[in-house]
Every structure is written in structure tokens, then in C-alpha cells.
Amino acid sequence: MSSNPDIHQEKILILDFGSQYTQLIARRLRETGVYCEIRPFDLKEGIARKFSPMGIILSGGPESVTEPKAESVTELKSESETLAAPAYVFELGVPVLGICYGMQTMAKQMGGEVAESNKREFGYARVEVMSDSALISELSDGGSVDPYLEVWMSHGDKVVKAPPGFSVIGRSDNTDIAAMADEKRGFYGLQFHPEVNHTLQGAALLDRFIKVVCGCQALWTPSNIVDDIITQVREQVGTAKVILGLSGGVDSSVLAALLARAIGDQLTCVFVDNGLLRRDESAQVNAMMGQGTQNSFALNMITVSAENKFLARLAGVTDPEEKRKVIGNTFIDIFDEQASRIPGVEFLAQGTIYPDVIESAGLKGGKAHVIKSHHNVGGLPDYMKLKLVEPLRELFKDEVRKIGLELGLSNEMVFRHPFPGPGLGVRILGEVKKEYADLLRRADHIFLEELRTADLYDKVSQAFAVFLPVRSVGVVGDTRRYEYVIALRAVETIDFMTARWAHLPYDFLEKVSGRIINEIEGISRVTYDISSKPPATIEWE
Image (cartoon, rainbow, N blue to C red; front, side):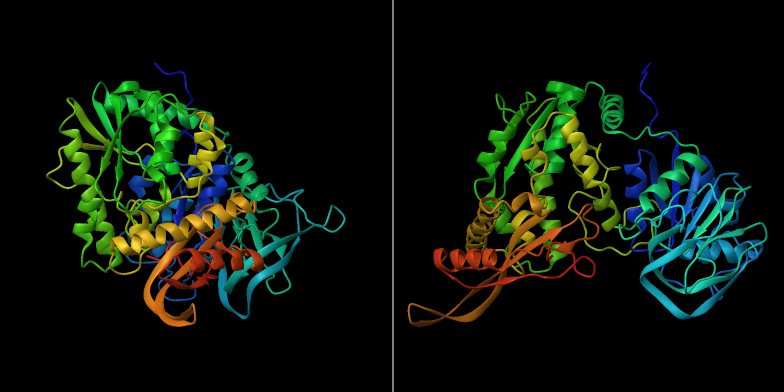
């Protein structure tokens, strides 16, 4: 019997009303050391009760509580498409925190009033702390004499009358009820967003809610996560053998280290050179993860050269989603072939992480739009006899990095920039050709090389080059040429759910552009992508 703590025992349920910041709520709670899950706002009562949360958070959302859809809690029908919280939320006997739209629907459902504001609030605001509360007492950006919170707002409606039993604990210049509390029942509402960095006391406020109000312990720690995953993997796999596609990226490398610790020589790693890798990628992976190296976990590794197979299957394919499917299916075919040569292989391990699931609309019962499909989300084809093992599926990228360090992987490996599973295949817009891949590989190498030389590599979260299959006019050696365009992309982010374009120095960008154009025949123009996520994504496809 394991003596490890049950890290899922104390947990918070987040009901999602469609806010772009819902994932940030989850990350902030995880950072405090408490497990949480995001579920759709209309989650069935039976599922919620089985989940047995110690607290519930109602997220923000783009809808308006003043619309007819947001019905009274007494009028809710189990099958109705309403944007109100289910009645059981307020009947489970656990604390509830409503954020923005979550606060508004809580207020309306419990007998308060919500109205359209004559002045919307978007961005910075100051909230005056009105009274003591278990949620916000002693939290102030202005000291004890003038207690106030510097927060970030995003709303058009506002609560104009608090429900019976609630007191007003915060106000802003535009909103008389910016925070409310029913201390007896543990119900709280915040018009502002504590999950964003612009709310300075936001992390402390959420920590107060889940630990003081809900009574949760900090069990969700890297060491406990590692122990829990190892236990779960051993129970799932037993004595069977596992095959893992090792790309050299952070997720697959951490997964390899985890599985090596959990099942030892039952694991075989397959590294596939699909012709869509970065320069020297194969050699680097073998140097970092191969036997006898600094990061060795006694990995059994097989290297497969499959450039021709991938390029042949991608010929004529231009749609990004179709490219991802072709690449993913080809990987699976190769893994299936390799598995057939290893007696006792029953499982295929994948480095699927929580953002992959979210972006692929894979949340249980989720209603999110598909942002992009991920080649490692959605299960395996029927013909493949292997079962999936996905130990990282619950984790955000920063959590994966933390457990990588916990396992003893080097900083160089753990903080390596992410590289998508389809590789350069989704960084070549349109059809993938060997000529394009070779040009892009060289440009990408120059960009990353100069980032390291300038000590900028670790100051950005991800950086890469993109090949644009269009020709732009240029002059090379006094000769007019129409040659290809390279776009450079660098972002700063914590969770990869949102990202800001990196403000790299102009002199640096000029140097990179000069090297790419001068050293790579066929490229005559370099651009820099200054789009943030959202509305753009980090990758171009």
C-alpha cells in the first residue's frame, strides 16, 4: 500500500462560462499547490458530486447576465441551454467564488440584481476595500491606512443590488459592488479578474480562497506529482512493455525520464527523423538522452530515418489540419511497425499535456472551439492494437518543466524552447517540400544561434523561423531576383495559453536578417511577427 498522499483528494472545480482566462485560473490554483479541473458550466450534478470538490469557482465569460438565457436558479431545467450556474452549485455546502460573469450570475440567481453599466470597465481599476472579509482582509496595495486593490477589470454589466445575506466588501469608481461576500455560506463574488498578473494581489487572493476559505492543503507539488504518476503508470502498465516517441522536446523528454524511473527497461524510446526537424536535432537528442550521457536514464533508443516517407505522404497537402493528421498518422504507422518488432509491447506513451487537450476541445464535455488539432490528441486508429498511456495529460507546460527538474534533467533540456510534434511541417506554410524544409532549417538555426550568442535565448519562451511560400522582389549582386520570405517569431509567455511578442532589439534583428539573406541562397526578405496570442496563435499553422 502506497504511503504517498492522494494529490487529487483535495480539489477545486472550475466551471467555465467561456472566458479566455479560465485556463489562467487553473494555473494559478495549481501554483498554490492545489489540484483543480476545468469543466463546462452546465456540468451534470451527478458528475460534480462524484468529483467532490472542496470549493467551486465560476469563471468569467463573454455573455450577458441581463439576457433572457440567464434564468433564475429556481427555474433551471436540467437540459436547458442556460448560462446560469446549476442549482446544485449553491447546495453542495462548499465555498463558491464567482469571477466577473461568475459573480453576476451568482448575484442574479441568488436574488440580487444585475444591470448593463452606462460605463464599461476594461483594464486597470482601483477597488476600495470596504470591510473585513475572510477573502480579502489584510490584502492591500495601499497599506492598512488606505486599503485598496489594484485590479484588472473586463465587464459591461455590473451588480447593482447584492443578494440577501451578502455584504459589499469592495467598490470601484464605476462599480459600487466590485466585490461581495456571504461569509456564513462561504460565497464570494469578484467583478475583477484575480487570475491575471495585472491584479497585484490576485495570486494571494486565490490562495486565500482555496486554503483559508476552502481549507485545502498544498499537496500538488512536483515531488508528489512525480510519485503519483509513477504509481499510476505502474498500475496501468503492469509488466507490459511501452514504446515512446521521443522527439527531444521538453514534454517527451520529461515523459521518458518519468517512465524510465517508473518501469525501467520495459520502456523503448523511438526517435523518428522525419526530415522536418531542426538542424542537428537527431545528434542533439542522442547526446542528451542517450546512454552514458549526463541525462541518461538507461534508455533503450531506436532511431528511424523516415524523411522520404513523410515527404511523400505530404506531397500536395496544403491544409494545416490535414498536414497535422498526415504527420500524426505517419508517426503512428512507424511506431506500430517498431512495436511489432518488440515482444510484449502493449502501450504507446504520448507526451500529451493539458493545453493540448484544451486547444483540441478535448475537455470532458467541453464546448470550446477547436483552435488547432494536436497530432497526439484524440486516441489511436482502430487498427492499432496498442493502448495509450499519457501521464502528463493533467499538466501545464510549466508543471512539466518543474517535474523535469525534480527528476534530475538539466536546465538546458528542461528550458529548451518547445518544438511542435509536426516539426517544420507546420512552420512551412502550404505544401511541404524538401527544398523549403532545407531553407527553413538553415534560417531557424541562424536565428537560434544568434539568440544564444546575444544571451537572449533564455529571455524568450519560444523562438523560431517560418517559411512563406511566396516570392518577393529583391536585388542580389545588382540582379533583380524573386526569392522566398522568412518570418521570425519570438514570444514571451508563462503558460503558452497567452503570449506577448518578444521586443527583441532592432540591432539584433538586423543582424539576424543580414545573416539569413547573405548566407542562404533563395531568401531575399526577412520579417518579424509582432502578433500576440490571442488573437494570433504562437505557431503560424
